[in-house]
Image (cartoon, rainbow, N blue to C red; front, side):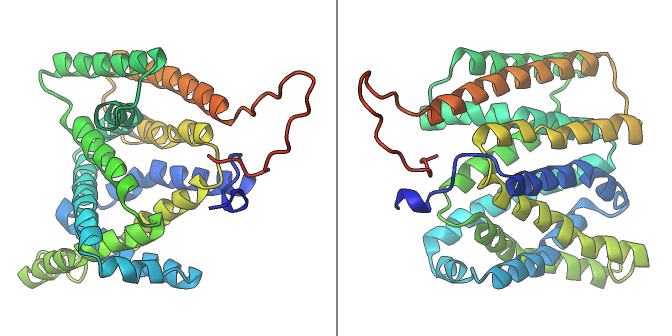
Length: 321
């Protein structure tokens, strides 16, 4: 690949619009899911899968990017890899939907706050990436915050830990999937489509389904899960290509912050002594992590210094990221 075809390692207004829109949509998603709290989580997840397929397929057809998907459908290796990521994201969705309905939205915010630090930990353990002092300090603070919550509650914060592990594992394996993010997402929901249809049809036959047997608002909300699932994922995928790593690293805290504010001020969830200690620890850890991320990004894009007395050679305006 020539330098001319590589994306610029700089921020763009268009990229900021895409990414910020995605994080804002994810941030207000609990309000939408709360309206479906009376619907069993497995039924909500089934409809998220079913109605994501036409949305994701429509986007790929409009962009003329379906050829890569056709190749993937003929590759047993790619199908196996996508099956693993599909399983992880479906479990993540199920825990998330259950937690919102069960009044544990604060724990979902905690899980998504911890996730960037868990990804750093995975990089060190599985990829042999070296951790700097700031990263080690951030991870230590996050672990200490989980310990505080565990001691106070007498149990591990199951929702936060489960969301962290499933989303972190999904993100890690997704990087190894040799498909574009939009094509990969469509492949995942296509793999999940048959089980999702089986669940939805079985519920309707049993008379417990909320799509045909529920109210008009239930039907509309379940139909809308496809849009609220696929749209932010695709907005993020396109925005990430047009922003610096440090900018994405900063923006990723928008969603859990909105979820946190929704839990406390909209859902009136209890923010007790343990949370008052643990959340500031997590915020401090993320501030430390962000400082390290920005320093690392600046170091990566710093242009080479020309020897004194010589003119620096002309460089491409499209540096490798």
